[in-house]
Image (cartoon, rainbow, N blue to C red):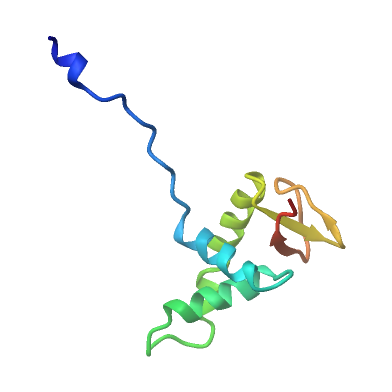
Length: 102
């Protein structure tokens, strides 16, 4: 018997969501829509240390936007502008995020 016959077939590893993406999905589970700032503030409160100032959420806003766009491209959330679903690759202005409708 050869060594190759004893090997088990390789399985593709599951890709896990980024921790920020997980926070986005968890935060949206309890509400209809949220802004990037709302999500960043929730994330900042989870990571807050005693020495952090009140503007800690600003540190997370870009990461929240990037992960929301990533999730929108995968079809897991929708980016809403003026009541309509916006293209995740081409939006600007004030937007909100919601879980994708199934």
